[in-house]
Image (tube, rainbow, N blue to C red):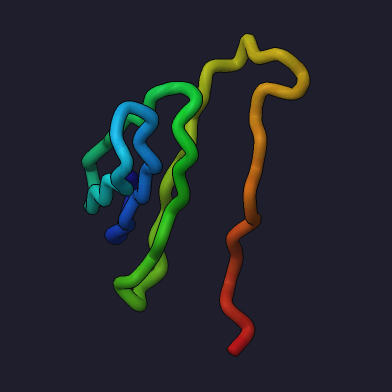
Length: 73
């Protein structure tokens, strides 16, 4: 994470639980392949984060359940 604070929610495959991890500037975390995850910014501040994934993927390997963005309310 380059700057800010971000929560990462991960739907675990090995048990029925959503794992929540908060990362801050300079920290990293890994999400195993095949586990749904999303980023949540609850800090009220802007953050800069990079999502890096394995680049040798099959064409349909990444499946999105929803798309994030700036809330319009």
